[in-house]
Image (cartoon, rainbow over all chains, first blue to last red; front, side):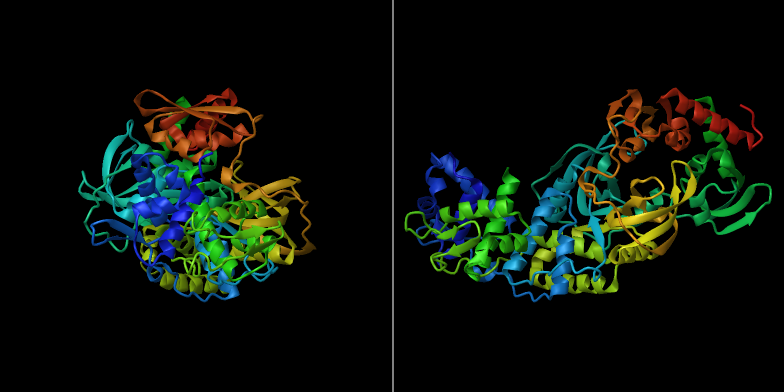
Length: 318
Length: 322
């Protein structure tokens, strides 16, 4: 049976961390059983390169040094690989324990547990019992259902331009987009990407669930500056009609439409089984009001009234 | 799987550093400290004796367990390579920092928890150094109604029954319920899971739909039930629920993003034919009305009729006859 990959990686890590002088590939191959069994040079080389990349993903700083004979050697120096002392009290440790559980995405969940285990090895105290009553009884979870998340996260981290097919909310067909990805943000359970759209020459926000097909990242990093503050949420909120700047007047059947009442700036009972409400009017209000069917009548403004009537006609004809 | 090999390697590297300081450590304690099952720990302990700086020199790690305690007989064999924990990788710092920052901004969180999170975040940023940089590329906002959150939180820790006035969008109505809280969780929005005495069943309540809340003096006694598995999504229609078929144009494709569905078949001109299941199809009248010209209900016929009827009644309010 082939030697398990975790065993091979572990051996490579121990060799690189344990040595004081750079070890050549030849020496490493002689010390690690899985490499001896790797067969020909080519398959060993491929395996070795991949393993080094994997260890670097785990945070290992591996230096490449050329010796006098021009042979390349590798080592992981202790002073560039050690975790600086972190002194966390039991409360802080419990807080991080809560934070480590929130990811519902394999890569980040693994990374969060890995971080916690390193801190534990560094002496982080263990939380006692779930200390009834002392902490908020909250279980936060970060959902990641979008397949585009992981490649985009890596592309943001490594500053690699990406290409993907994107279908705008009202477009019939997806369109290829070339983007320098800046940041990902999760709002109300959905992920969004902010970045510089190369074809449009401007900042754009993309909803990950509208990316169709694979995200391909280019090898060459982009060099343009990433802005310090990226306003994903403001952009998305304006799509969602949160940026209301006007006001509308509606009639609402008594007892109906609680969410409209909760948003109302003024409510007046009409005494005829209906109430009059003033509510903030932004993008998307017409679609929302139509949901309440015969329990809502729009009074003002005329434009909103016409939009609602238009929508109702479409359904009535349906 | 490759990802598992990476996670296992990462864990074993921390494990050897941890075990070095704790000769004779108990399997149960170590598993708990590392957040893994005892079986996972034992499988790590099976691999470790095959690891070392050279399989030839006899300096493999002599780590041994009798299933209860763990002994490392030659902690110096691997030199100083395992003496200290390793620095945090970019992904590790990101995963922990982004999560901690997100939780710290939850409205309604107890101040002592918020303070602990912020202190821990600052220490972690300092320890991670450069690796912390990538964490600014990800951010998460949780939504919660702070006041309701605090009341539910208190009810859970004091094991008290709650009284709610709760809005159900499906019926556009407010109902009064007494609920024995089980837990409070956040997936984008924040929810209370509890035993509802009105429906005599487990129910999930979104906090921003709680119109009013009171803590009662009665003790909460929810039946012992398995908590819901949140990884599958909140809405899990049952196989026996009636089928609803919706056809939408390009402007109605969002339906497939918001409603869990069995299938979404592409139609000409960017449309979709979406098949979903609902325990109560009548509750989808809202959706039919909202879609307007962007889509229509194909089945069941009763639902399509109800939407048409509602639209006609609504138009009558504007003095229109259809």
